[in-house]
Image 1 (cartoon, rainbow, N blue to C red):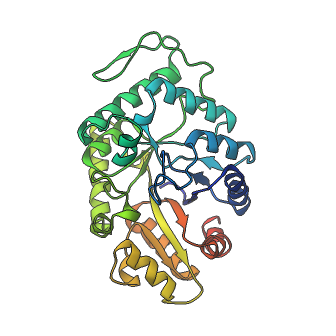
Image 2: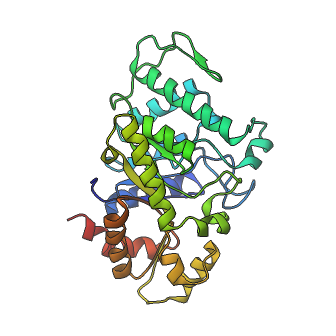
Image 3: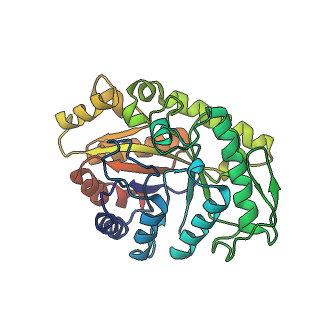
Length: 326
């Protein structure tokens, strides 16, 4: 089993805030830092601040030395495969080999429409993601890469220098649909298991999908992934399992503020949210115990967390993280 790892999902409003948060996360001992990849924030709207993913991660790489850079996740369809390969390679160099390339098929239809990007059906977007992955690997590893697919082609493409990490940065796919599991079984080393986004919303903004994505549902997804990996000659233990979730900590048991967070996610009460794979809510001791239980029960070892409050970040750093660093 992979060792427990903890990352912070950040939503900086500007570059100064981003680099400050990156330094703090590294000083606190987190494994990774993540930002999302959107034209405008799914947590606001077109007027909400939203930095470009690769640019802000490069700025964060410049002020850190150890923490991994793990976009959660890049929308593959915003960039051609060749441009995506070049962006990822450059960030891998800027970070001295610390990139974990998180990729997804894209989901927020409104930003595609607003910026004149095609938004084909989900099945096609996933097929396109599959071709992105093949071209990425070709450009990262071959001297004269060529590929002809249904949607994308390259002919004697060039991508030099190659990534520092060989054969390329680790690939983390985000999603849990059967089609994403198939791609993960073939291409990924990390799977960020999240509720479905095919209806144009992500889990903080889609209470119905969030509540349906129970621990049992997630375990079935993990079992299906294992079968797909075996069919491709890979061992399930080769895949690092992760999840993106809301972190809310308080020294008060049954803190009303945590109950409010649970209700905003769609749960009837705090106890129901505490059983969900997309939330870690409670006191530091409760969260420590819950993480240990989840690792044992599901094999999920990589937790990418959005800290709901500064207190949540501080308490986790001081009273939870050291427990798993032993």
